[in-house]
Length: 185
Image 1 (tube, rainbow, N blue to C red):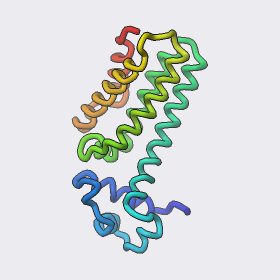
Image 2: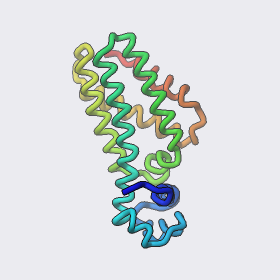
Image 3: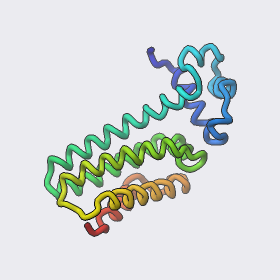
């Protein structure tokens, strides 16, 4: 199906509603009112609100996967210095992306936390970090290091979003990068 302006209006309407209401409490009627479309138009694009949320989730996951795949490829095929600079670049891209879609990320991480979606991001990040660590010198108990790192990164992202993204993406990337590089492996 061709994605129209209406399709995106409906997606944005759900995100705006999630800023103030739990997902389970949001109705199709509210989504239609918020997006300015009729129910029949909603159903021409989506089966139900669950499919709509899945579409939004997949939109962001695909972009995150591309960023992680690019980072992994570069790290696996580069020397250590190039890897370090690329990790910083990857963090910059991540924070720029989060800022661009700030309302979505504030909603799912801070305002109306979506644990399943956050776990999906964490799981994908874990797989990516595991692949990255295979190309670096061996580390004792890398599984714990990965969970520690992801938890810290999520806490930093949460704090940034909670403070309405006061720092620039470059500042946040530097903070994340500095914390990662301080960790003794």
